[in-house]
Image (cartoon, rainbow, N blue to C red; front, side):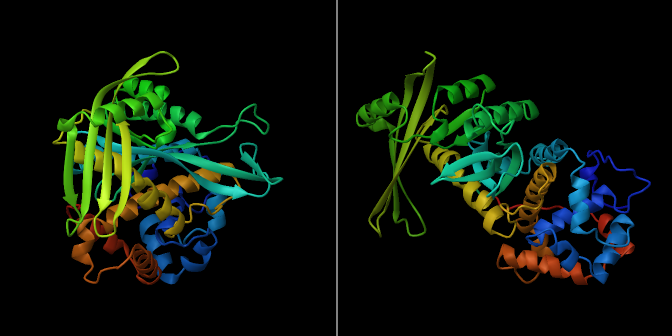
Length: 424
């Protein structure tokens, strides 16, 4: 059986003498489900069980055919989701250890980790004891959100690093689980799994407060947190008063293809903020007021941070540490919801299986990014894909029609090659 040992750490509780499909074959089929944008589990049986696919599964796994989607559903229900989370962490660790992502660090040191929540599945009726509930106009909705920590880069990577499922412990909790509670659980797990990683947390305004500042100080993390006019009143007031008096802490740059975007940066350092627990925090605030001179529109961005701000780093910090936070929405959640992965589709009604499919989606999304942004595919494919949708379609058609023999696999594994990524 030839397959990268990605899933060797997953414990398979099935009787190995009675199974037809080994676990790596099941996991591989789940990856194809997402990478080929099949959008539903049943499509595996319709689209992947071709004559060419049978030959490839024989070469890779020594089995006669691609497993059915229902087989995945049943087998995954007996596995441990935490072991799939560890696969994702292991993949990220390998990329970090091999310095693949080093060119995308902020200030040549910090990796930008964006933490944000999103909806996963919504039901009209209770799905399980862990459902969160929301009642509006007399109608109750049952839903399952997640909190994601994604490593984002300036060139468009958005890799899942760690996931925290937001769920109630019982049907009628005294207080429902929420994004803030999940954040502290996720941050603790993140620190334990990546204790030495130089992290720059990029967060929205929900997290602007003493508990987050204290947590980052304790973990020795840097942060860039959106600061709205309604948050941290004393900090905003001090920034408004001092920023107009400190002309040496301003910078104006022009950007865009025709240099029609004017950005005016202002920053104030060493603002003392006392939180509700009477703890003092030393904060820096940076503001970017961006004007499109051709349209006459103006947008203002403001963040609170513990990074040192100077004229020679303010643009990099604001752009990569602050504004790149949106990559978790665009390259992350939106790509997974509307780009063919169908994040909000219920791939199973079983709670355990749902989580494993979610993790498999994250693994598949990571692999697709590495393939499509890598230099190897440019050497092998003469005709550009044009879009990720076209890539998924051509991958599916190749899998359905191209036979891969044992010799093909052996020849491929015998070659040495290097993949590079665009760092611009």
